[in-house]
Amino acid sequence: MVVSASLLFAVNGTVSKLVLRAGITPPQLTLLRAAGAAIGLLALSLLFAPRRLRVTAGELPLLIAYGLTGFFLVPMLYFVAISRMPVGIALLLEYTAPLLVTLWARFVQRRRVRPRIWAGLALSLAGLACIAEVWGGFTLDGLGALAGCGAAVLLAGYYLLGARGVERRDTLSLTTWAYGAAAVAGLITQAAGIGAGEWAPLAGRVAGIPVPLLCAYVVVLGSIAPYLLLAAALRHLPATSVGIIGMIEPVSAAAVAWLVLGASEALTAAQLVGGALVLAGVALAETARLAPPPPDAVAPSPQPAAAAGTPRATGSP
Image (cartoon, rainbow, N blue to C red):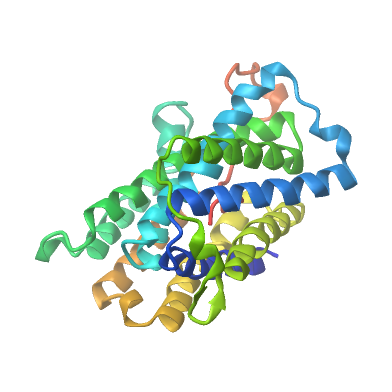
């Protein structure tokens, strides 16, 4: 299930880039994705568990923050990044989020972590330096790199908010509400003219494929299906294992983008080495955090801890 979800997410990067090449802007694609996924998940929730959609006023701030970070801002920044740099590089930048979560757990939440976190941090920084090829001057697109790094920071926030959310709600209703919040935010940005563009490209084709069909992939196979697969996988595997197995996504995404989009997506030897270092560093970070002690061993904490592992975000591309 995790491998299938990761491959669907990987293909989604290339499909999203094709949609962007057709003339759809990142905010428009973010809105299409959020609205489509919200409608699809709402239908599933009403069919299988309508009572779980009930929400209290006290839950709204968390749901809104969760939706705005992981389901609106993260994908929009990711779409900006892939519109300006190879899909593989954009994903590797975003993929440093679990490392940021572990550092947050160590320095902000004051939780114990294994010493391997420092090796993970060193490997990831070395890998990012290789990806940017800093010895020859910064070779990445500046705005694209900022968008990718911003997506990583917000994705880390999404993980932390999600850890709180799943303590109160089931994952299906939580994600349905989050996508709904993202869709509302997308409508507001469009009404305000932020990133607005013509919707005429939806009637066109790119690479011989109708744009609406590509958008349907982004919604159904790039969002809803992998989310359901990951949610099911977490019943059988610990979150840390899901996160580590999911590391095939950036590798697969880079390969798919290169095969479909051609030389513009090719990575240099140094960038391939850097990608391997980043993934190795993230793997160390995924396993560096110690599980919190049992509830009966310590006094309850007013601030819930982040999950023991950080699986691939169900709301990210």
